[in-house]
Length: 71
Image (cartoon, rainbow, N blue to C red):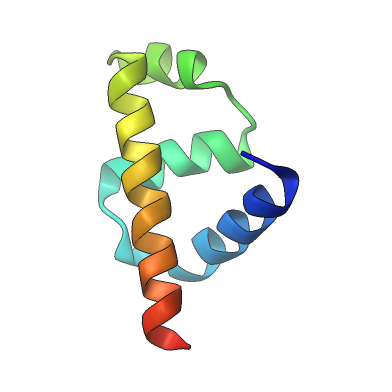
């Protein structure tokens, strides 16, 4: 994720986090706010790195879709 993309997703997350699933919210918080790696997040949540990556991708996609519908 580029710095510009990270800033955009962080801004969208702060605004629309209430519209995400609990898992997406938790994973994106740990990634964006706590600056943890996917591996670290997987260890904390006792899941696979792939499951964390899937949640990040779905959360990012949902945030971008929300932004499109608002604009």
